[in-house]
Image 1 (cartoon, helix red, strand yellow):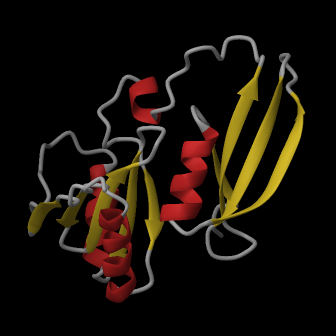
Image 2 (spheres, helix red, strand yellow; image 1 turned 180 degrees about the horizontal axis):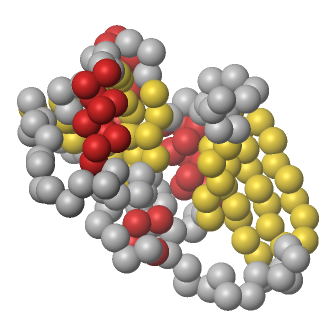
Length: 178
């Protein structure tokens, strides 16, 4: 079972649309518009990620009490560092991973790449200031991995994992105005 959609509040739906459809390649396929139970109204935009069972969605809120000046970065809203709450999307293979990295660079976005030893990830920020990731699983999970994960549920020992094999930042080229 996977999830159907992730829904987040939008600070600027037009910037999010440009990013999620224009840069990420997700297609806007549906909007629901209606009143909010607490007052005001909202538009709920759904972007198809790969098929009609996987979406990311955004709420554009209007006249909803208590939503003025909200924090759209889900980590900052919770008082946490940026890397804690983030949005991670899968890629099918290394070619797709490299294509996604180049998409972000071509859009003028800086990209951090990390080889976590069992998966490879690239990260950038979306217009809501949320950390967004594409992740490629590169390893297999063993019975030992599961045993270690289960033991960590109750352990108070500080036993660090193997550090990432590689961390690098790819800087987008500055666009020259004509």
